[in-house]
Image 1: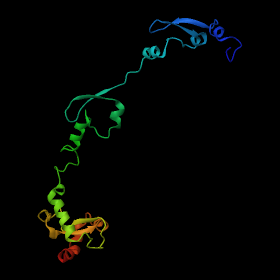
Image 2: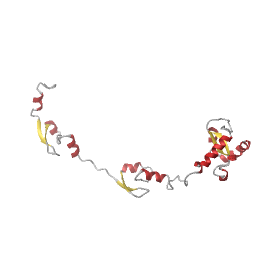
Image 3: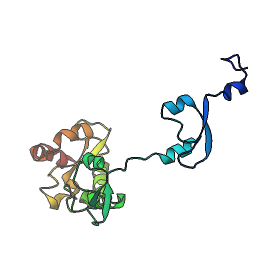
Image 4: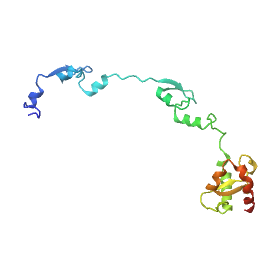
Length: 193
């Protein structure tokens, strides 16, 4: 017996409420309940036929050119709207090449001298000379090398050990951008080294 009816399952299924239809896609015959036909359903025999028969809206694509190699690429309008800049790239390697080259707004001409081995050696020498202790507050935490005469104004003194002092980060940060103002006050400390 069926749970909701006093009729047996076979009688319940084969009652006159079912109709035989042919699938709109594959023309196979299948049974469907009359209530589904009234609602506009029961057109396809299976889910796979129903999904293959439905039309999807074609997505709009806009053709743009790669900012590096000028190759034509397709982008969706939402991708173009979300883009912060007007540049588009066909692959990530072209994007990286573009942002690390002279076309980038922050390009300053290549590697800085601060990345050279010579600069690292100068920094280590200054910190070792001062015993790894800040010359102002005598702290041994986060010790950095500081140029007494500013780096950008005195290129000839960049790698001179006499132009350096060991300072902790807390003493060094307030001097950033104000090196010329502190140069006279720090000069006697360098002489004492």
